[in-house]
Image 1: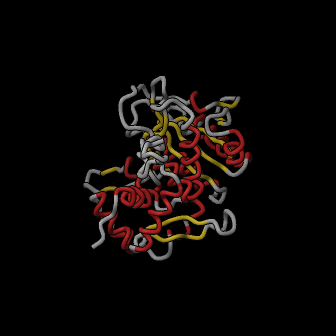
Image 2: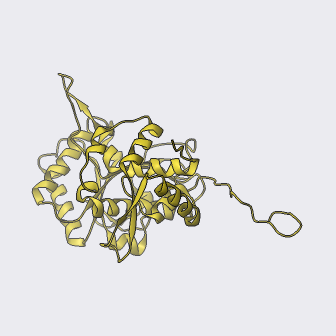
Image 3: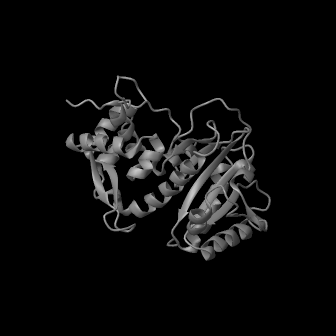
Length: 300
């Protein structure tokens, strides 16, 4: 029986948590050089635990990585979890690949941009699409469990000067009918109110394909908050287009809210917090497995 090495375990758990990742995304998430990752990929593929996936919608010959059923079973052992439904899935992620890529592209960009910030600042929690809804699971009076809200991603970002920004990500491709959006906005208000004492600190980020879609989402939200939700606490909604995020960055003033003007990342409402806790994702300390040496036996 094969036993995964440490780096292999990290890769397996990452693919288990996020379902599909590119080499660049894994490199940013785990802070490994791509050459190191490719060696691990070769081993994981030889063991039958991981396979590549075509991402031709990005560009020709672009590839992502997913777990095989054997790889999922190994991940069950590593995480002490078991989801039988993952083993019964037919087809690779049931057509979710472009959507997953868009969501993960946002989180990867956030990690990349945080690398230039102080060591203790960065993304300290990223819950993927499959598990994000579990944070807001409800149980009724008869003990029946339901998950009415399923964000595309859930994250916590810690600032160097203190404070933590909790955010929910919705990657909007423009394919959902306007009434589906209306229901989603309503669900965020209804469900988050059961978990948040101060709803203004719950940020909901819509990443869209174009400016028109962003404006339509904010118009819907304004209609709701001024009518059906006018007497209720509500979360804080933001929108930004993929093009603006790629051109200016996640931290730039590219985010639109209900009020006029554009807002930057550090201006979002945040929880009070300190600098204790986990090292931000992408900033893990990695030892070089084979130090470079010069003649005479000394390291450099």
